[in-house]
Length: 80
Image (cartoon, rainbow, N blue to C red; front, side, top):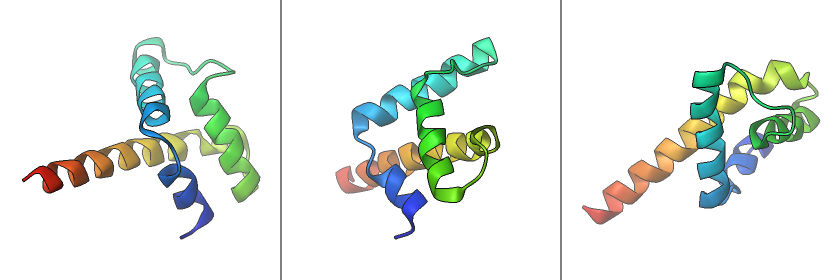
């Protein structure tokens, strides 16, 4: 598994919930706080990708939402 995918799959459900809530809040406020968990995750991805933290912001949001959606879908499929 590539290191970025591993980073997302290693997130706990609680961490993922916090991240999704921050993304939702940013839709209202238009910003992420400097010490938000989403920015912390951007810093971690920057260490892997060697890209600027700000450049990673959109990709990290997408990665978080995809991880949450795929987990949710997997649970729905397991229940049915």
